[in-house]
Length: 95
Image (tube, rainbow, N blue to C red; front, side):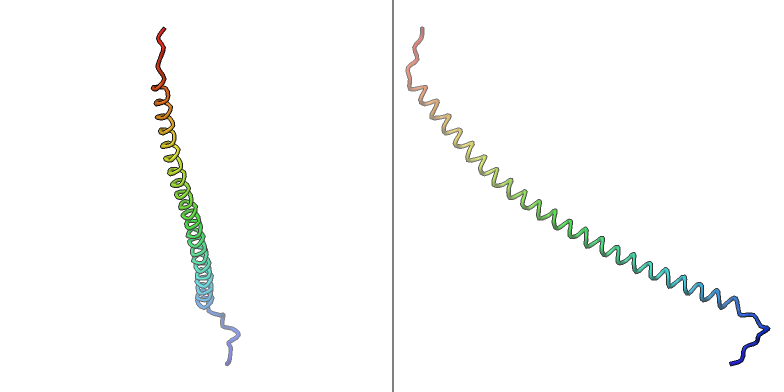
């Protein structure tokens, strides 16, 4: 190949290379953004799953406590009824 020393290199070639390099840089950045988006989505899914599991355990605990409260309420009603029967059996003295 022979080069003409007097001839300047084409500016058009430099512009094309610069555009190509810029396009490549932008594409690499898009890949990083996509990776970051994927990481954020997986992090959010993981956090969501943890919160879901925590909510399920809270719901189970609430059901256990509700059952226990119901039993205590029934026991309280029974004891109160026994107490009322005990006092109703005792004759009241009127002064």
